[in-house]
Length: 76
Image 1: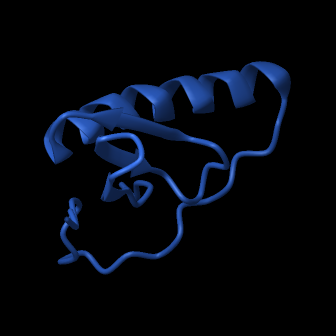
Image 2: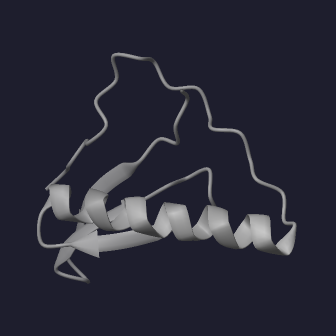
């Protein structure tokens, strides 16, 4: 099953890791670790998709991502 790519990066301004789902506009979350940020953005992604379905909004297809690409790419 294809899934949405997740980007993770450190934010000095927020003093936390930020995880985003680039294909889902505005879908992001934060955490004290990259793993926590990913767990939180998975919840945000599920809620984003549920809301889009409920409102009849278009749901974009996931962008291509090589199968061997890492899911977490934390920067510091």
